[in-house]
Amino acid sequence: MAGKTTKGRVGPPLDHLQVVYTEMQRALDRELAEAEGVDRKASALIAVTGGLFTLAFAGIKVHPLSGDVKGCYDVSLGLLFLSLIAAGLIIFPRTYTSVPRLGGLWPNYATAGTEEMLADLCSTLAEAERRNRRPRRWKNWLGRGQAVLLLAGLGLLGIALVLSVLWPTLGS
View 1: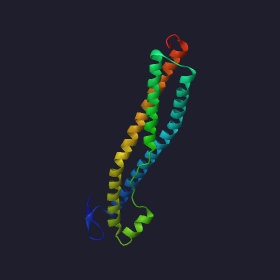
View 2: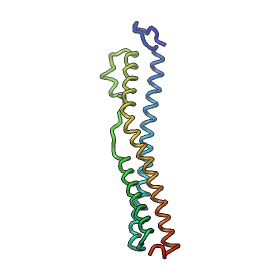
View 3: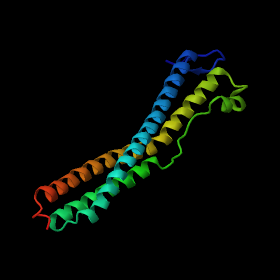
View 4: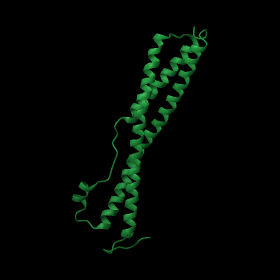
């Protein structure tokens, strides 16, 4: 699809470069919005998990447990605590690479030709995507881990509470 450009340079046509740049910019914007969404979800789950952890931890003094029920209860508290740590790591600030916006365009591209500018911006976008790949994967992996830990902790906590309330002889 390479063709002769306006300055005699062989490469993709100008309209092709504009489409590529626009689509690459949209993809980067979607990636950054996805990372922000993961942060918002983690923040909401921190509040829920923290409140649940606090209530469950305080419940030990009010309703002491023993035996297997206490073990189940302790494991559920550990899982909830790990879920809190995972959420904290998710929202921990990370640096994301972005392409230069209006302010960055002036000094670098004021005298460059349109084709040269678009080609350079496309390569900059590709580099930004490459650099953002690791933090994005890390956030997504931690988000899934947080959800699994939270659900497992809630399940075990529910089992421990049902056993301690419905069958008090098992808890003593």
